[in-house]
Each structure stands twice: as C-alpha cells, then as structure tokens.
Length: 169
Image (cartoon, rainbow, N blue to C red; front, side, top):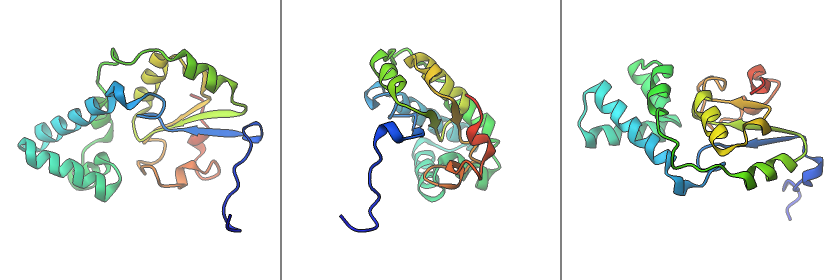
C-alpha cells in the first residue's frame, strides 16, 4: 500500500460511526427514494409551472450543479427549504419493514452512532422508527443542520465546525 493510504481502524477502536440514511440504512429495493424523487419532480412542476420533461431536466441539473435539487431551488428560485423538505418527504413508509438484524448489528458497534442525511430530520426520525433502530443513534445531522451544504461537503462532518452535529437525536 502507498505510504499515504489510510489504514482501516479496527471496529473496537472506532469512537464515531456516521451512517447515511436513504438507500443505506434500508435497501434500495424498498423504493423510498424513488417516492421522494417523484415528489421532487411534482414539487418543481407545481411550484414553477413546468411540464414533466423540463421539470425533470431542471431537477437533475440542480442535483448535478448544486449537490441537491433543494440547493438549486433555493439559490435560483428562493424556495423555502422547509416547505420543500416537508413536501418531498411526505411519503408512505408502508413498504419499509422493521429490520431487527440491522438494529442488533448497529447496537453492537462501540461508540457513538450518527445519521448524516441530505434529507430532513423528520424524515430520518420516521425512517429510523420504522426500521426499529431509532434508539441506536445519538444524533441526526440533517441538511438544515449542515447549513444546506449537501454531502459530500466535509465541513458539516467536523464536530468542531458544526455544534449541531453533536446534537442529540
């Protein structure tokens, strides 16, 4: 290995575990993000008065250019982030089953467990409760807590630069 290649740390010495939420703490086959994606498109069509194809193109362009569709809408259309997040995360979780195996695996990890998501805190709380592992996480860092700087921006991950990062879940 190259001299500058980080070496993996043994799990027992890890103090903090950071988990992504969507399509990570649950399998993509449950299609939750597809539901969210569809609602993003609908929001753009309704709010900006666009047809399906132009709305879809704008949604994906903002994702590429700004890191999230939300950030593009905020920067270019003064869309209130809370309104957008509430709308796009208003989805049914009926197709998402509890995951006791995942819960047990997370429970066994030493140290602090944190969810870091480009979604809303409310969405993260709903998904974690549905899966059954909400008590395993000590904090949720959502897009608002990250100053609307989406992953993979590193600044929100640094505990010394974002006091909300360590806020209890």
